[in-house]
Amino acid sequence: MSYFIVIYAFKNRKVLSLKLRRKKNKTMEIIEILREASKRIYENVKELAGTEDAAGDFGRGAGGDISRNIDIIAEKTVLDYLKEINFECIVLGEECGRVELSKNSKGFVIMDAIDGSANAVRGVPFFCSSLAFAIEDKLSSITDGVITNLSNGDMYWASKDKGAFLNKSKIKVHDKEPIYKIIGINTSGATPELMKKLHPIFEQHNHIRHFGANALEMAFFARGIIDIFIDLRNKIRVQDIAAGYIIVKEAGGLLLDADLNLLDTDLSYKTRISFIAASNQKIIDDIISQIKK
Ligand code: IPD
Ligand code: CA
Image 1 (cartoon, helix red, strand yellow):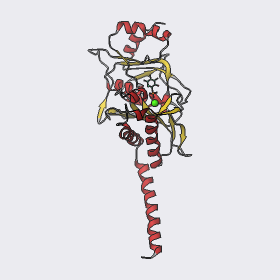
Image 2 (cartoon, helix red, strand yellow; image 1 turned 90 degrees about the horizontal axis):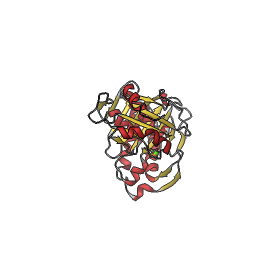
Image 3 (cartoon, helix red, strand yellow; image 1 turned 180 degrees about the vertical axis):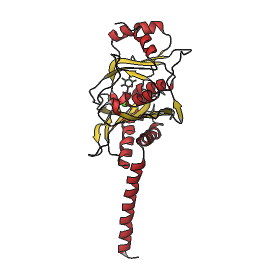
Image 4 (cartoon, protein in one colour; image 1 turned 90 degrees about the vertical axis):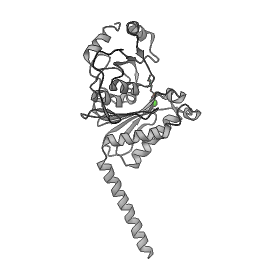
């Protein structure tokens, strides 16, 4: 075989593999891309949580918190995968900030590769990854979202108008009077003023919960095992709630801001959010009537 035949075969193989990659890209739904990226995070970090290695300090990330080794590994997993499949998008990562993977972007991948980093570093088995896709610079333009519980691999996912799922099963928020009403309230770092306002809720309800990873708590709400989830601290970032936003909506939940308007915001790093996720207006009215003015 001559030298030229070898060169020709090699060049053709290259062309062929590029075509396959492009074809794969075209046929892959966005939700499949997010699911695969999320699965890869789980594979790469599942043995790391709670180890000394998870904690390594990489300075402050774009979201303002210290980036830990486990955060960096999880984000790199997603960025590497999106590059591998040539997904044309802009990534808005909690640690890495805005990363333009293409000049011809189809939209934004909003990434909190590890939500509940403190739990992940200490080994408390309640942390997750949150990946969402938005067409525009707005929460309400999110079309797809995936939250993976990184302590057991459970995957919550939803696409606009197609319903919400936990692994292969469809999920819905809990819309009936429950045996035990479970109220999720994020009070981490809440001001004394906010604690005062919320105090009547703590007095009147025995089953108040906060687990330390907003995205996974939204997924639990969407699945119907928490009846309402409240975060009025004005601290949460878009990255923490983007996937939860579409999963809650597709599971039939209501998402309101602190003024009880439908929740929406831009995707800026500066934006901080308060929100209430509830299954119906009645439970919102009940709780709101208990919050002190
Ligand atoms: C945190 C979690 C936590 C909330 C914090 C967030 P992170 O996200 O969602 O529940 O109380 O405000 O910062 O920093 O672990 O991605
Ligand atoms: Ca995070």
